[in-house]
Length: 67
Image 1 (cartoon, rainbow, N blue to C red):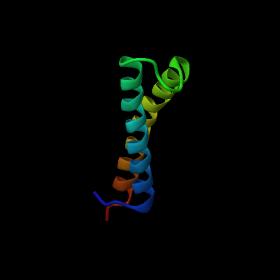
Image 2 (cartoon, one colour):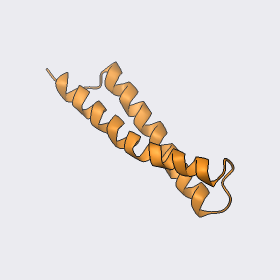
Image 3 (cartoon, rainbow, N blue to C red):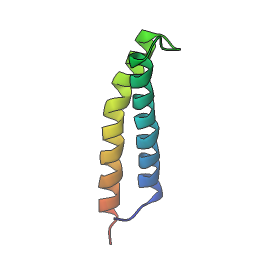
Image 4 (cartoon, one colour):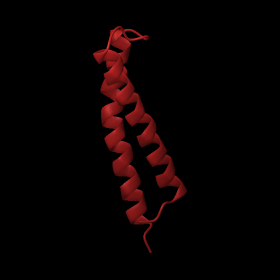
């Protein structure tokens, strides 16, 4: 698999959204979240599917550019 700049950006987005998901889980599970329960739950709800979408897009782009 070859890493292109586009797939690298997708992987970077995947990492950021995965970190946001894990952080949100810890915030919700261990006390009162700094941003509030509703905002943290929204971040969690958005970051989980974004992680999968970014990863899928990165793999798809890398496979498309294999030569």
